[in-house]
Image 1: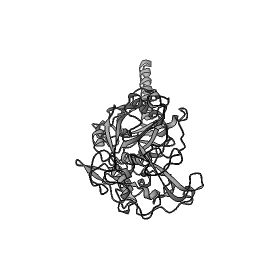
Image 2: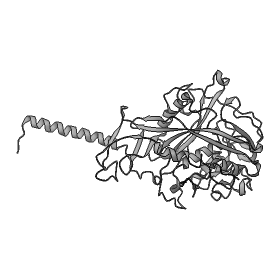
Image 3: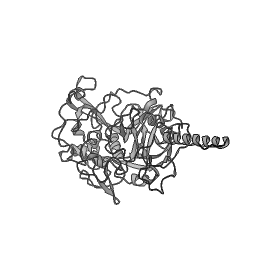
Length: 468
């Protein structure tokens, strides 16, 4: 047996111990790394965060019971006495079951803009706040990983062994995002002039009820970039094929909400949305977008329970003397840019709906839902609908126009602007929620721009679509 000097033995033990510790650190880091094909086949989920976010109860969020006269010609702002986005209210009659299990025949809605009957063009400011995801270690220090076969399965030999800082910025996606059909003009059958896709959907929705010249348009503006810092254990990541950060990031939905929504009233600079409010980058009269790069949410602390691609809601803040002490509602959405191929093939095959979720699918979905349900049914009156069941089996009782379509075949409607083929989502139209036959929308449609996605009404549904 070969003998070692005591000093050499000590050095050998120290080296072995250091190697073991480094291996343990790497194993811990790799535990949060996912292959960049992880999202293929994952189901896109809808999400309806409570108004005001997770801290609304502590902030004493206002609950308003509407007593408005519900006609499509009123220009009253809903909710009464609240400083918020311009909107109009309407109503319809249809037998149905309310969320409390009781029969109901009268249903009410509020929709962004001015009424279609007055033929007015409304322009709404649409600030875009790009958000960088800063992934940290558990102790809060900046996190880097070394590319290896576990976290970079397609790296070439020359790309392995590189140190990569986990800092994911939306910068490469901002220019195409601002030029998308949500903000850019294109041609649609519902409008005599080129317009934005959400306006085209609204014009289709009201058909002949809309007077010429009625438009609801968004005026985008790029605001100061913000940063969301995430502690290790609250996120997962996947590197790009070349080992750079990142193909996508998955974030715990509860952590994301805590870091996004203000936890004080009035807000301070401790959260992303709070920073934008304090700086005046967003106001109560805006439709604000918090724009993230391929950042999706998972539920129940399980990365397999994903993926939320976006949501819309509003933040509730107190008023002051400057606005007559009216409660403030900041209407906003979180939306991710979706790089092609993350959820399936980038070819957008005809009969595979997941193939088409890319670029601004999430953003178009959320903005259309803001237009049609700006306050997410918070008063349990406006935008609550009879229970509906989409052809894929999703059941709800709220006028979320994008959720109806997201599970169906061919959910997106490709629109090319400046040579870029975008994939905004088709949306369900008001007559579908009203159970109106025939539909009063353009061409008798129930969905738009993809008029063949919904070809019939949902059957009348019992409470919570029991027995679906």
